[in-house]
Image (tube, rainbow, N blue to C red; front, top):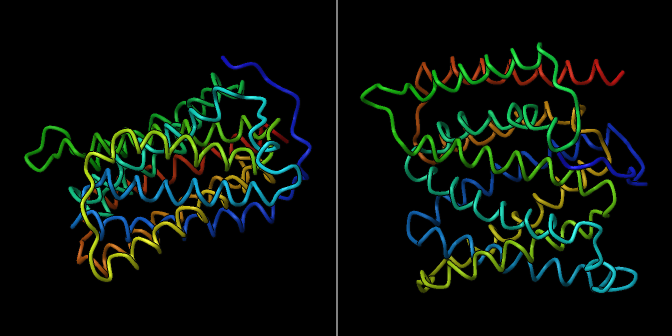
Length: 297
């Protein structure tokens, strides 16, 4: 278990944190739709690599304008965890974009929405929080919902659904580590290391999949790069100004936005088992977060 550290001095403002989380989910959903569109024509590794190149360039530019310049944001109290966050995020993005192609936005996000339950389950070993039996029961019910979505053993079961589960796990760990490092590092430091860690990781793999980008696809790629920077900056700021238990319920809005994009722009449909399973997952997640808030009072 990672030891607890001295709290960050960032002023806490739950209302601002909630609005930041809502904005985060909307931008994430938009970038997911763009990612699926581009991945239909280009290798996923290359798309994610360019996205992180822009992310890293933006992070470096932003750091240079901060008091103390790049030297200030390079200094971190977590020299191993900060780059690791970028590595985890890069792998998670590749995994989930692949599932967008194989499963679609609706079903991918129906599975991915279990990540707050994974956050609750891992909050003990990573953040040192106590998880009581009620929260464990909610986590169990939530994963029953995931099984309903996946329908393992059924003819329509796709192994790609397990890749979506993997991406949910990686994103949960990324989110917990983001909250953890925020106790001592500023949002600027976290943003910088997220971009650098992800860019290095993807360059080592994505450069081998380079394919020339043509026509208006450059506009889509540019939009994707901008939304990628914006979404993670918003997420880091949200966790920096508010407790995870207060803002996490609003993360479920990403399922709503992403499903809407899948239905309207990609002609996807929502199966009955996906609706039932996602409802169980969201309900269990909201209960878990409510219990966490009660315990904090």
